[in-house]
Length: 445
Ligand code: CAA
Image (cartoon, rainbow, N blue to C red):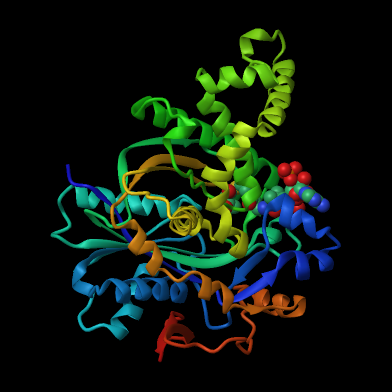
């Protein structure tokens, strides 16, 4: 069977940053450790005045095409996933194609373009679409450009303001990929939920605490569904487990639940029983309340064991490193987690070829999806070619007043003018409005 998966990846971070413990926390009257320890965030990325979902997506795609020596003829699909779209009809992928056509000979007239929406899980769904298109043999030897791009902004004063971010991940999906092969097996956990939504409005309506519970419930369902086709999973089976990361603290909660599930009935559970007691089973309790209390106590004890801590430090913590510095990129977030994991492996010199990842995606509203990935032989060359550090380092560090101006600039209802903080250099920029109220873009040398 032909292997299909991600051949290459590039990112583009918004060119501004907000220091959460240093700049944001004091203005909010918060303890900086709420951000660094509670939520697990140091900085958020923001778009400069001339950036938006199109420029970030097109710039990530351009980097990827340049690095891989691709031309428009190599691309048979452009799928954009976003929950920050500004047009209910014309997809962002057409704008991205228009940008790329400014800098390449040839065009994307024979590429299928679309836009996927299901909150943050749409990036993974776009990967699925590309995978299925190739597996169906409809690609004529071409690959798919999958772009996850978002400006994750919340209304000023909303609790979600602490978890904002902006950036894009571009992925090239092909046969015999150089980075990871996707599994055919998938598991879903999906239900009609009202946890986070944007009913024809730019900034989300969020029930933050409930959104955390819905994330965990749907992720658990997805894991059970995945195991129903792929067999029981075990902590030693996967080198890394990248999750959708709205903020790293969310993943901390998901990881302990996942670990508890995976060790059930294994020798690990037996060994830990001597230390923290048996995993409570519902049949052992007359009242559900007592069972829930016992589970909470068991989870607290479990997360303090050496076995759990070691597993977390190896399989989970490394997936969070970029997210800590950029915040939530919604559709791109789980794909940043995969990238962080593979960067960690490259830094440590781990031989990842043939090793497995378990990838947990989530979108509010709500749906989780779990699939496995097998790392390809050429993965390390790919990862070493991606320059994440310099993008993070070059960001302009905003004061709180400047952050307020940037938020207003990107508020669709305000659209205030703002002098950019950075200078564009070899990138696409937003440069005004066309006659039908369309956004216009130019490439700046
Ligand atoms: N030192 C250490 N930790 C501290 C602390 C301190 N001084 N102060 C607070 N904390 C901890 C808290 O205990 C809490 O951790 P636990 O949940 O583990 O107890 C954490 O820091 C956050 O503190 P609060 O719960 O008090 O924070 P909050 O009420 O301001 O809201 C939030 C947090 C609900 C996540 C909010 O930021 C929010 O609504 N975010 C947007 C929604 C979101 O991201 N939901 C995630 C699931 S939905 C999803 O994944 C889709 C998506 O991308 C949006």
